Each structure stands twice: as C-alpha cells, then as structure tokens.
Image (cartoon, rainbow, N blue to C red; front, side, top):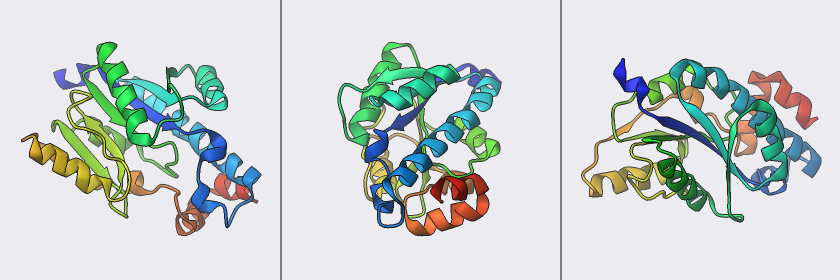
Length: 209
C-alpha cells in the first residue's frame, strides 16, 4: 500500500501537568490529578509507539512541560518545543508548521488522555484517504484529527470543535470524513468518564486513590 509511505507525524499535545484536568479538581486531589495525567500520557505514548512502527509513521509531543519532555526523551519520542503556554489550537498550529518544515505531509493529532485506545481504531484513522478526518468525542469535541497537508484547515479546538473543523473543511471545499471510533472517543474529561475509566483500566483507579 503506497499510501502508508506518506510521511505522517502523530502529535500528542501535552499541557503542563499542573494545568491539566482542572475539571476533575472537585473529585481528585492535585497530586492524584497529576498522577492520573502522567499515567494517561505515558500510556498514550506506549500505545502509539508500536502502532507508529507498524504503520511507518513518526510521533512527537508538543509541550513546554519539563516532565512531559523527560518522559518523551526516555521513550525516544520526538519533542516539538511549545514556545510558551499556547492554547490547544495554537499549539497544534505550531506543530503543523513545524511538521511541514520537517517534510511531513500529514498530521495526526491524538490527545494524551485516552483511557483505552485500540490499535485497530488508530490504524483505521491513519488509513483514511480524506484530507480531513475527524473522530468526534461524545460532546462533539475533536478527539482525533488527521489532516493532510498539516495546515490544510485552521484548528478550532474547544466546544463542539468537530463541527467547527468540519465547517472549515466544507468552506474550503476539502473532503472531510467523520469517523466515530469508540475507543478514541473515550477520553477522561469529566467525573463520569473518570468513573468509567476506573472500571475499564484498573491502573487508573490505582493512581486516583
């Protein structure tokens, strides 16, 4: 399959640990929240590494968090330095510009807080032929996004961003595809998601204790 040879970069945006998952602050202590964020981030990278090898794509973390950078280094994952604490859309835009300059033709953005992603779901996304492929979260946010070229549409992360990303593609006459992939929609943003994650992934319950 010649398509796989497309130079694709998977990007994992990582906020500073202390600033992550503030919506869970009512449920979890700060230290439990930090442990949770750290566990999910490491699990995400460990999930991506074999898939990237299989699919012949590369991985980078976009962050300015020292801790996140150290983990990426240990795992041999590339780091895109975030100039300062940018918002998510700007951090992704920064990685898109960087990826393009590095010669990547496609960008796949994966959140660092997926509870139980499946290899088959990610591979399905990576094999999408559309210029823009959107995997919406349950609340219509964007959980996974594949764009080719990396800066083909402006990034509009935030509330109901999957609709905004679709609209950006439509306005430009670019073929967009919505892929509802269960394992990629399961992120941990709310207490309800956290409760479900604790049942699915025992480790998560362990760090939150």
